[in-house]
Length: 171
Image (cartoon, rainbow, N blue to C red):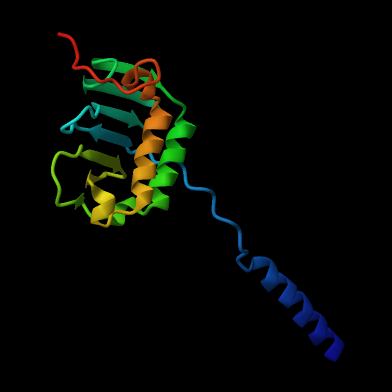
């Protein structure tokens, strides 16, 4: 009888183990279907600072609008890969963009203002940089600004022969 009880206990344990939940890795989250828009705006300064806005959507649509001290004024369009957009979003996460102050303003005059806006997951966060590093803004935010320009390819519209533009746009 003890062997029968042992066998019943053994097989009962096997059956219970077979029904136990297993640690199965969760599937990777699907990319959000919410719209994503990254916008970088640069304004003029007392000198020759380029003034333009570039926006990038989640599917890689780039819209540039040049205003002053740029090679191309008006609206231009381009396309980048969605993977490049995802790379930018990882940079936003790395600098903890959502937890940054809304504005970093130095107590000086005649500087350009650079604004970054990120819309994703139904929320929008904007960070204004006016001499921001001297007002406590992390240097990583300036690097993010440069990365947005690089990925969007704004130099093709902003620079003239690889150099900053020093003349006002012609009407």
